Image (cartoon, rainbow, N blue to C red; front, side):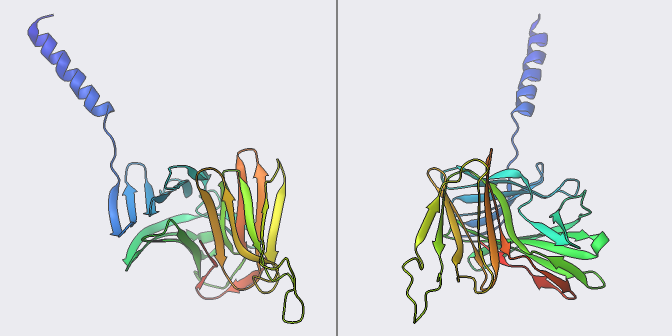
Length: 277
């Protein structure tokens, strides 16, 4: 091999290393203090982050909407990806938000910033039901917390929707903690169990159901936490009426669903679903 051949081979090797070693850098879109939203155009993903915690979403017109990951400040996964984080019940049938096979059609994504808070909104239409749904995510600088909710708007005649969902996630297994509510405590009756913390480690296949049929804190406060390592996953519902929480132990973690108690309503104008954090 002469020197020209050796030089050509070296150039080819350098080019190959450059191509295979190329990495995609997420592009920052909006930022306020420790809260930010960035996007990776190649991966079709969007990340909203705050105070060391990051929620990454797959938002792609050609694929189903998905939660790819929720990571804590210690980099531990706090949600197992591959599914949307909510569902919409239309005509009595629960549909995964953003599922193409369920009929959802991608409309767009938008970002905004207001003071210390950044927000990401992703919109899908459901043509068979003539319904538009927008999933919102907000994060505020200084807190490793996300607020999320879904807005609904009919695209024509009224639409019947039900069982409005705050979120639906699979999280790592750990000890569940929750807080009792009034438990019948009032001015004339004292209950030692009122507003006391409870905990339980679910066994394989076991299920925990909490909630209220009237005032949100009549039996249990709409909040829970799961210790699963160096960090804890915590969540709650910003709601004063009837609500429900189910937590079921699976082989790969705990399926948690939090939202309103079973209900239906005829939607004639835009409305926001319950806000969760």
